[in-house]
Image (cartoon, rainbow over all chains, first blue to last red; front, side, top):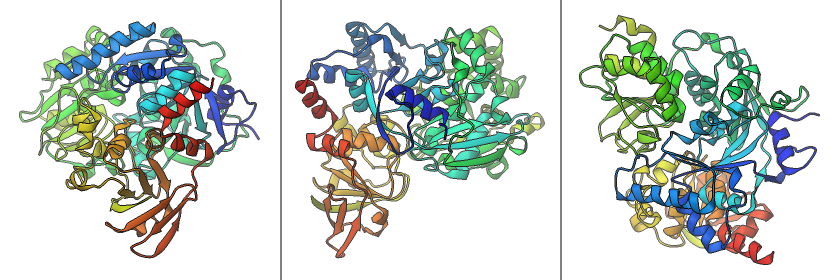
Length: 423
Length: 161
């Protein structure tokens, strides 16, 4: 019996020929990513207490994205601690205020197929879009990794999520994930790996593919992964990442999946998840005409270049509704530059969008764009738990960038396919 | 270990356990707001040794370990639930809180007196005279628990080198 792609990466990282689900193994970590929230401010005092340094500074990537730019003395202090610690430890890969960690990491060429990686953030599975096995861990777990370069793992079983057909216009990878959340629930993949396959997946761009493993955090998965193909390799080359042997990483034809779920991309319609759970997803018509005071394009899930382009396509030549705030926080500085160069930002701002800095921002309830009690927001982000984006009494609906931009124009939730009808 | 039960439902998430608005500050301050959006009385009235009981998927959401650490600061050393979200499960052990997987968690009512034997995987409900079996904790995690969390565990390991 063969192994799944994830099992192969784990076996490689723990130095065994074969691993099977349920086995507890200790893996060598190929890359450890931390941000300003779970990183230096937690790690610095702990490493000092233990009297040791980072095991291999070259394998550590530090990115500031949660408290950027500093808005008060506390956030400024956290950023200072981060900058000082990076210097002190001689960590060469440090990206200060360059964007959200899950986007910056692949953008700067740090991920590649077959890599066993950990990240101090729950959306670390995003790295699976590049054929890496990347899991999110807490700050104390990260201390263990930074000290030893190793981590224990209970080899997870893999669920295959197979999407056939291709998406129709105004339907996106975000809609695919909202659909999956509704189908299997918030713990539908608890402790498992979700591997995405099928022509509904391989036909997606890398920007879109990233959304799939990213939101496996919302179904409780250990991580998500997509086998690399030529689209992956081209993207990696363009971003200066390692491509050698990239296509050697795939699930064996005789591997064992715990379950296989089949979906049809061609019949999927735009989805929206109602408060307060991503699993409350349903076709957009179920939530039609709900008034929104804020429409937010942001986060690792929904503010990549193509996400901004989707929003621009919907809003081009139109104006944001009077009682609605339309906020756009591009996921990285490189994305901002690209969107400025191709006219996307001009289209958005001409319609009345307000540009925000790149970072986790309002999605994590930290940066600009926090909600008040009684606010209703539609957001291209990943989570809508109570209090996630500010007040516990705010309501957050999740949708694709198309759905968010359409709601910004209409002042209420509408089917993005009908935005042409809005005056 | 014996304590009174605080009972909650499914999908108790990290934004409820550790609200984002308090992430910047100290964990001690964060602990004061633990669970406040669903139970404003919890953080002010929970007693050291009390036990939190949840349904499925306890701790879903963020990797922020303040979710487990807040409970620990409030004196909660055990969470009993039908199932746990994976990052919370790891964080809990690392911070000295034992997450016990117990199919019968739903039988516990608020205020029930529970006696926990984590090593044997047993929850006794003293109020109802019932005993529930839990999954036993893997040996490598029990070692971390015995050392008082991952940091003291690492300290011990580094000393041994």
